[in-house]
Length: 241
Figure 1 (cartoon, rainbow, N blue to C red):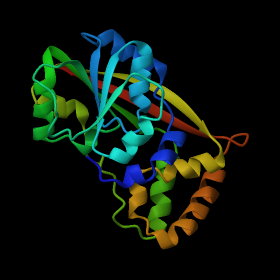
Figure 2: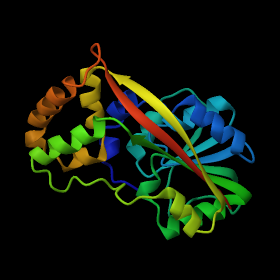
Figure 3: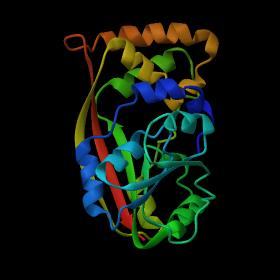
Figure 4: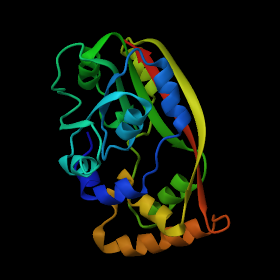
């Protein structure tokens, strides 16, 4: 999984990252073959809490203990465990479903996929959920980082294709559902959101104030009545073991 960059910004991440559309959670619920679900790469528990509120019995895992510390501050019944997707601490066939909300690109390798299949029950379902930007949020972020010569700031999602990955790993009946969503942010919030992106770790600390100033200027150009609207396509890819 990702390094501890996210955990170091765990409070900001949890306060600024928004939930997934309820239609997406409902879709997963309707397709699921049971109510016990392992949420891998759960971070601060945003997706885990949404799943629990729908009626799932959730266990969340993440490799970053600082992120999990934030998740454990919430009053819920979710078990949060620090673990790697490549070495899941569960018995074979332990879960009806496994989910990965915005995290599968960090561990979409053969070892992790085999572990996911191992802990799934027969006919269990693996759900991969991603938010894909359809508006200007992400492009502005990349353009500004390029101006500051943050040359390494390439997304780990480049050439990332969950549908094909599940097919190649012999999941059955691979399918996808798509949901259009709009998230609203103040100018300070959208600049803060950019700082929770994995790309932010490539920005040297001494130039971060200047980068934030430039991001704020560019995002300000796109405000609608004082609000930045982030247009998203949320895609749920699922496959049966």
